[in-house]
Image (cartoon, rainbow, N blue to C red; front, side, top):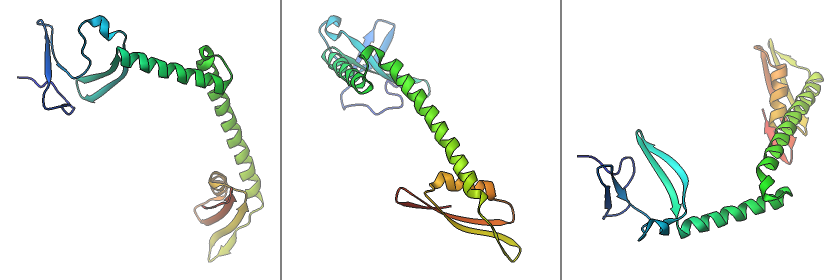
Length: 173
């Protein structure tokens, strides 16, 4: 009177059902051992919610868990080498690196706005039948800079076409 598999495909034609007293009835689709100590350690590597009211735990146990921990340890050591710190300091160093990256990105955006303002200052519209028209090339400008210039100059009675070149690409905005 109930579905063992809710929100997921049954993994095979045959399915082992395990009943633990009156406590639980579950589908068993994975690790088997003669003794629970054979399954040590058990690592939950992911939690999914494939459907409302259904929670699926993805885990590794026994030798697979130990191998997974080895790979995680290797990755952590490699990250430490890249960051130039001991593996114990990887999270702290990564946090500092991300904070610095965000700060530099904001600084770059401020500089792009300044360049856009300077570029916009020297541009003049032509009057075409009561409509202000601007068609210009802005060298070394990327799409973000063209957008900044366009926003600075735009109005309801204007048409703006800007061409920019940056890193061998041509942008039109």
